[in-house]
Every structure is written in C-alpha cells, then in structure tokens.
Length: 635
Image 1 (cartoon, rainbow, N blue to C red):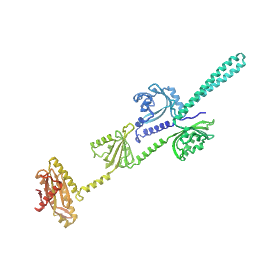
Image 2: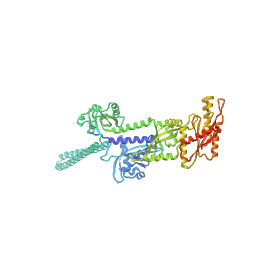
Image 3: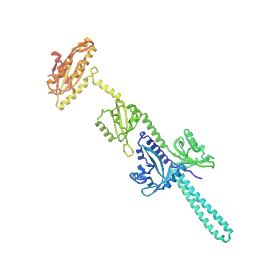
Image 4: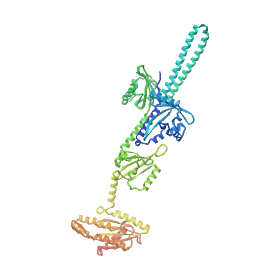
C-alpha cells in the first residue's frame, strides 16, 4: 500500500505566489512594481533562460548564492553546464513528469564547489516584449528538504525498487526449494544440496532483513521530513469514511491527538467554516471525478473553541480499484493565516489607492511615472495611458524655476520627504494649484526605488485667499492700494532709501470741488469720478511708484528715487492735469481739480512713515489755501 506525500506546502505556496506575481508584472508592467525589482529581491533562486540555446540570460541574487557563482558568471553559462543529467536523462525526466502529472522536473545541479544538489525546477515561459524566455524557479530538495510531491515521487520509486528485490528474492527461494526437492529425489546429492540450500537461505534472509532496515529507515526519514514542514497530514478511506490524521493536524485544530484518533469524514467537516464548506466539497469532488490532477483549496478551519485559522488543503487519490474508482485519498493541511492577512492588507492598500480622493502618483527613482490613481486623472484631466512611462514634467505650469525644483529634490534626497504648494497645468492647459506631498519608498536595503506623490487641488482655496488679500490691501472702488498697503510699501521704501542712501517723495492729493459733484449728481456720479481719476493717476506716475487711495477723495503717491526737482514737478503736473480733465457721466461733464502736498525723505530729523504722510497732508492744505489746482512743498 502506497502512502502519498506532498511538496512542503509553504514552499509550494511561495512558488505559486512568485509565479502569479511575476506573470502579472510581465503581462502588465504598468500595474505595480517592475519585474526586475521582484526578481532581484525574491528569496527563491530564479533563472531567466533562452529556451532554444539554454543560455542563462539573468540570475537573481538568491540563485548566485545557491550555485556559488557570481551573477556575471551565471549570465555567461548555459543551463546544461549546471545540470549534470545527460540529454537522454533530461528527456526521460520530462517524460516521467508528464506521465505523473507533475508541473516540475527533478534534476541534479552542479554547484561551483563541485557539490551536486537534487533540485525541483518549476519553469514557465513569459514574453518580455517580443522575446520569450523561460522563468525557472529552483528549489533544493536534497535529503532533508524534500517537498510533499517530492516525497510521493521518492516513495514510489523506493517501493518499486524494494518490491522488485523482494520479488527477486522470492523467485530465488522458489528455485532453491525446487532444487531441494529434486535433490531429495537424487539421493547422491541430498546432503550436498542440503548444505547449499541452508547457506543460500541464510544469505536471502540477511538480504531481506537488510532491505527491511532500509525501508524502515527511509520511511522514518520521510516522516521526519514531513514533521519538519509543520504540515498536518490526513488519509481518508472512502469506503469506510475513516480519516487518519497526524499530530500536527490535531495541533492545527487545537485538539489532542487522542481526541481525533477515531475521526470520520463527516466529523472532519465540522472543523470547516460553514461559508467555505460547499466550495471545499466541490473542489474535492472535481478531483474524485478525475476532472483535476489534484485537489487544492484554501479554507477556514476551527482552532480550539471559537477561533478560526486559514489553511491550504491539498490532496489527491492515492489508491483506486480495478475499475478506477477511488479507494483512498491523502493530503496535507498547512496554515496560511499570515498569508491571507497579508493578502487582505494588499487588497486594502489597492482599494485605498483606487478610491482615495487625493491624487496619487508613483514614480521610479528616475522620475518615470509607473502608476496613478483615478483621482489623479480626475484632477489633472490626463488619462492613465497619457502619463504612464512619462515624467511629471507633463504637468509643468512654467511658474516654478529650476532653482525651485532643485531645492525640492535636495530636501527629498536628504530627508525622504517634501511638502509644499505647486502650480501645475491640466491637460486642457488650465493652471491649478495643488498641495503636494512627496515621500520616498525605501526597500529593506535603505534604497528608494520609488517615490509616492499625493496632492489635492487647492485652486479654489488659493483664489479665495487671493480675493481676501485683495480686499485687505486694495480699494474696492478704484482698485488702487489702500491705506494699509501703501503705508507698508512706504515703510519698506524708507528702509531701502536709508540703507542705500537714496531718496523718496510722498505726494498727498485731495480733489477740489468733489463734494459739489456728490451733492449735485449723487454718489454714483462721485464714484464714477473717483474710479476714472484713479486710473488716470495710476498712469501718471512712473512704473515702480505707488498710487493709493486713502479714502473719500484723498490719494497718496509714493515716488521712489524721484530724481531732481524738475522730474518731480513733471510727475505732479501730470497728476494735476489728470484731475482737471472733465469726466463725462450720463451726458454730464463733471469737473474737479486737485491740490497736492509734497515732502521728501530722508530729512535732518529721524521720522516715521505716519509723520511723512502727515507732512505731505499739511503741504496739501497749504496748496488749497493758496488757490487750489496746484502743488506745495513741505518746508
């Protein structure tokens, strides 16, 4: 009777995950981290092989460590320089794997130090652009590290070898018995043949005992290896429904071995989560019906009282009757709770990435965009295909110079983090403001192969802030700077003049006859006069000077570096001319004039901005007293 064993479940799981992840990355490189990163970082030994020539195209660090060659040396070798099997042996192993339904091959690989290792090779072809390569994952299954399926393979060959030797021994024994009978008939040779037969019998008995010891030792080694994997094993007799399990199986469900000694298949179902039972039974029945080469299913099982753990349940039919009906099935349970929790975290991260309201952009260390989420497309107007493989320069607004980005990357390189406001451009050309946070994603070696940028659209907020800024510093009627802004600029101009030894002039302007306009035509006419004259005053002063409205019909001009007396008088005359030119409103010609007071800075005494404006106001008052429509210098 044969016992079935499985490849260690943890290793099969790891290989399965690696192949799925690799396949996903190769088929859609833009869906996550690139193939090369996973290939280099994976702990399993992996080779990329040209299928026609057997040339090793690449080897990951784990493969270099396993074979004892450097990656450069492996890239210069062919696989047949490592595989010690002859081409005929390789062909036979492939045939044997196909006949037994195995998806892997067992070879002997030669290491750099001359040692040979028995390995399982899982190979899968993948397309890299227009070039097809074999991705081979190498698993060391030399004695002490055999997988469950490797155990089945090894046990099968062992039992066949033992059966053949026992059969040969029995045949030899029958021949000797026949010789003994013939010898008894032949009296002359009775005694001689008797001694020979006894001697041969002793030799055969010794051979049978030696074979029995080998079988016992090999079985013990197999069970020791199985114990080392931590897998729970089960055997199910379909005719009786009896289920035999090992101690590890009992430990997984929180039971003592004695409690599950008489377990039946019906009782085993009680350990399976009700939501998973139908799926488990369907997968098992599919194998029993011959629709799948093996049974495999992830499920939750009860641990102790009310707790649940995830296990990977694998098995296959190991005995059938002469009509092919299954008689016995065997398999393993391996706990995968940690794996399922990790998968849940990955799904949660993917969901957060997809549904986040903030735009998310992932770039490589070279700045190439490798992934964006839906919010990125919504905010920027770019489709995912528009930006994948490009750099964030596609969003550049041109409002930030090279020094800005150099400072950003300096901080990001030094600290791994940068945050600030950036103006970018949407696909339709519209500028928008974003609050941007960039973080380096570091691997276990401290390297930062990826950068994650999160940003939200703050354009409305910036426009609102700009509007508030305008309300706070600009006159609502004329659009000129108000008292708060002009006094701030005056203080700055005074500080610059004092520091650099320059000069500035302050002109205080008040309209003559403005009250009559308001009284005669109303405030709407007055507002029209103020807004029209404000624009004229703004054009009358030089670029770099400030024209402001203090309130009512009073204005102030700050003239920076005013020049000589003639230049100042030229500016003041332009202001007087602008004020005296009539303003047409509703068919009426509205006329006013202006009186201007002027003062200079610096002076012999140390004065502040308020005092300077007051001096110009006093001079303006004297201008009004002396006839209006003129300017007067403060003495």
